[in-house]
Structures are given as structure tokens and as C-alpha cells.
Image 1: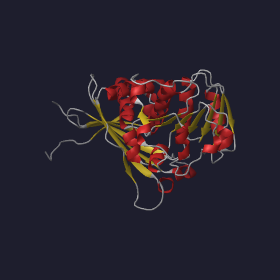
Image 2: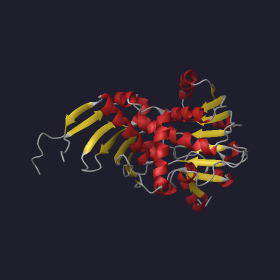
Image 3: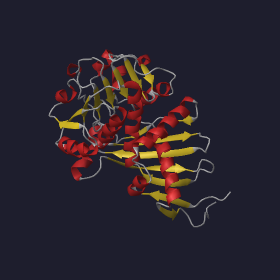
Image 4: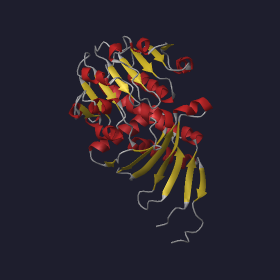
Length: 345
């Protein structure tokens, strides 16, 4: 066997050119991956979170998350690692809040094959998971949604819901900063929906049939129990502790991507609710059986459903593998040698 000594480097522009931002393709990748998960063909270790050893929260000190996975598929295994750093204050300095890399290895000899920008894939796969969940958990007749947050990930959330909800007509968005105005102006040009920036969380969530929260490493809830009327609402809690834990006591169903990973992470709303004994962990179900039609999705218009994904490494790896294959086909990226001669062997 000839061992490759070249590593393919894909910039953000390369990832975009190879379909990394195609939400529908990503949804197809991830749906297939959840099917493989249901068949026991994915090894998914828990997410590792690196923090400075201080008393400050993630919101202040930032984190680096490491997500690894192995996917056993017929066309060949996928072995991938994503390292993503997140620092909320970056945006003040004109930097992305989250930046990182995805590394793919040859599953046979374990040599690295490709390293690529992680920003695009990370945001796109997050939206794609919400698209798949919404198709199962949200009433398809929904016309009004409320967004709490206006960052990059909220853009892919909105694009995902636009695909999942054919009757969507009205969006209200709020944020701590004035970024909601730019969000509304720019996203209105991309989708034919009325998007209104509003001042408060209450204004954004009032009468909304779907509420999406996506804030930067939040450790204080933005959506409170008093904001909701609990008449068939679906909440997508994409970030950390964004919804008051008491809300979960009013939910008919609470869905995680994989609860054991949310429990391990420990900082999201469903984990906080379990810790505070608002709910018991046996009330939380995983998404895979719903996507794979082993369990039903939404049963009625009046169900209140809470979805809180932690984010899984196999999602990144599955999308990254497709991007890598497209890069090989289209001769994109930059090759550089890891070594000229492996003289140390």
C-alpha cells in the first residue's frame, strides 16, 4: 500500500465552491448518517470542551470544542475530527465568533487526508439538523416564527425552517445588539418572507408557533415561561442555556440529538432542567428513532415540543467527506507534503 504523504488543504472559499453551504445536500448527508447511527454503524465519542481553568463562564472566556467520530458506511469509512474555537467577544473585533478546522483521516492507514475550514460546514450542518427535526416535530401549516439571536447560525436556522415550512409568512427577530436590523435586511433578500426586527424577546416570541433560540454561549435564559402561551409551540434551543428551565415542565415532548451527549456537555437547557430536577432525564428522547420512523413525530397541533441538539461530530464528518470528494473531482484546494521522506520510521 502506498501511503499518501500529501495533505489537501481546503479554504473557506474551497468549501463553499464544493457545496459546503448547500443546506439540502447537508440534510441528505445527515439523514443518511442518522440512519447509520440507528444501525449501530457510527462511533461517536462525547464532545471534549477545552476551557481555561477560571471561574468565568463560556460566554466570557470562550471555549474550544473537539468533536470526533467514525462512520462505517459501505463506500468506505469516514474518520473525522472537528476543532472549533468560540469566543463571543470576537465579533467586536471584526472576527467570526467561531472558527476552526475539520480533519479527515484515511480510515485504513490513519494518515491525514484533508484539513478544511470548519465555519461553513459547522453552521450548515446545524441548520440541516434543525430542518430534519422540523420536518418531524413542527406542524407544517406554521406561518409565524420568532427568532432570538441574529448570528451566523441563526441564518442557517432560518434557511432551514423556510425549507421545512412551506406556509411560513412572518418572522420576528430580536437580539442584544442592533445586528437584528442587518439580519432582517439581508435575509429578506434571500427568502420571500416578512422579517421584522423587534426590541424584546417577548415581542419576538408572542404568538409565534415556532421559537428558535441561538445565542453566543449563553448562561442566562432569554426566553421565560411567562413569554409563552403553550398552545402547540415548538422550541428549537440551538445554543446553551437559552430558555428558562421551568419551560420544560410544560412540554409534552423533549427531544435531544443524543441525550447522553447533552448530559455530558451539561450546559444546555435540558441538562440544566434535569440538574435542577425540573424534569427527569427519562423524559428526554433521542432524535434518531424519530428520523428513522421508529417513533412518531408530532402527533397533534396542540403538542408542545422542545428540541435541543448538542451538535455531533458525525454530522460534520459526513458533510466534510462529501465536500472532500467534490474537491478531488474538481481539483480544488492546495496540496502540501507532510514529509519528504519518513526518515524517523
